[in-house]
Image (tube, rainbow, N blue to C red; front, side, top):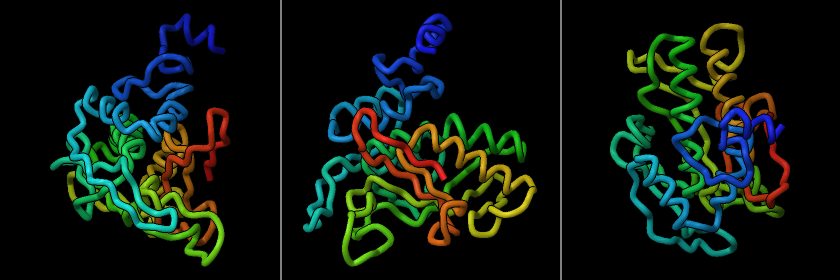
Amino acid sequence: MLLWAWARGRPQDMPWTPLDLGAPIGLSTGRKLTALTGNFALCRAKLDAAGVRYTALPPRDGGGGCGYDDAVRFGEGGARGIAFHPAGLGIACPVAAALAMWEWDVVQPAAQRHFGDRVASIDHFGSYSCRRIYGRDAGTMSEHATADAVDIAGFRLADGTRITVVGDWRGDGAKAAFLREVRDGACRLFSTTLSPDYNAAHRDHLHLDQANRGAMGWRACR
């Protein structure tokens, strides 16, 4: 498969080629995005090269395994023309890089196919939250505790149409098809993608994170 990808001139499929946020999504893109974890300088360089507008946030020490030292906030108009609502979303840089590619290569093309319009903004439930998985009192810390996750609640098209996970996931209409397409596309870019198909805790949002599980770490898509 790798030789076939090389012959086709698709460096994004090769695990040893540099990540290019402006290139189409390839077989190795998701793992390259996850590998940005812990290398803030490289991650910012990738954002800069792709023309992403952002502000680096100061480190935050939340104690008890919480906090971050690699977070960014997208500039006015979002990554490159899209806005996040509420404004001021701060996220770990590897999540920001994946969100930018998700918008360009997955969300906007899907919106054009299903609605003939572009997504103007993405609704979210936030990123950083010093807590354990599912709010448990003990156990593994959530990726939200280090801003390495974001919860996507819905989308707003340029014509004002709203698409929400809680209201439109079920069914066989254009909105449901769009939501499933952007979920499936997120699975190619994020370490973890969880939707209402996973459990009731995710009935109203898509959980996207860049958990670093090592070079050969497993990826979750539900």
